[in-house]
Length: 197
Image 1 (cartoon, rainbow, N blue to C red):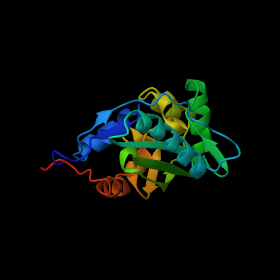
Image 2: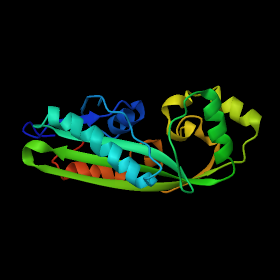
Image 3: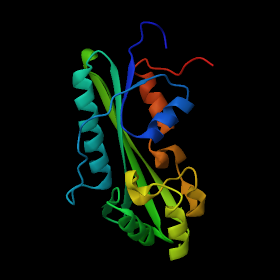
């Protein structure tokens, strides 16, 4: 970034989004938005992620209007149902049993804004994830390796994901929590670029 480029704020509590952006070469500050995520049977998974990303982003952007702010939201959809984060380990096991042997969609919405310039944009990316057929033992073993409570769908594609995922169709970074391919292009439109190598 040049010295006169706007600062970049990630409006997210997600360590996975922080890691993805850092690994991609971006320098940024983090401000965690104090916003409750909304799940509603009246929303499709795409609508829910877009609405949540917008709400998170605007809370932080209004407090930092002179800076570029990026917010995101990721949810899992199975058929017409939205699957968010499990309330406890038992709920996580139930979610993984539902996903076992099936293909589900992961949708991430991204909202970028620079309020001082009156500029904002949003987009969403969908990937499909095919799960292996999971026995109760496989589920128990997997849940012993991760903390599922902060993860939509009760799982993570990175780390031990290969224990339960057969394949990912589409953007892998999207399944982790931020579609880097479109995010890099979106940030560039706000004059935010990766650090030079």
